[in-house]
Image (cartoon, rainbow, N blue to C red; front, side, top):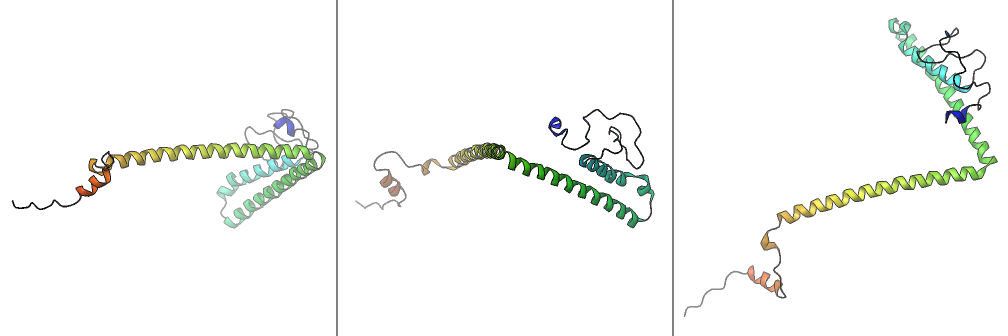
Length: 180
């Protein structure tokens, strides 16, 4: 995936081309494990990363931790977050424009992707239906087992063609005996 994005942005260097361990330039926050940026080669991705780092550093900065003016801290954090959101919107617009260009130049590719997405969704939903059916069968079996345990032997109809009459006559009171 990363190799397919290389070259999309003008001036973007391949991974590993930046010197590691070089201190960052002025006004560039640095975090352990991040790669410093080269001056003059700002791309949307670089700006997005820098604005994210600025948001993060503003939240953990000693100036803000030790600061007493809460309104100043809130304003600074809000500005960093707003810049990050603006750059994120620009990045999203860039990719939407590329997607639009692709749909105009190669509409069959977009259709293939849509068909693939629909197939994946159908498979996911089919698995979900199978999962629910398995649960349904399990609980039907549990219900059947519970109801069969609670049945009394007299609740079961006796076998034979006159079972209904035998059951009905069993519920009648006994007939009085005739004196002889």
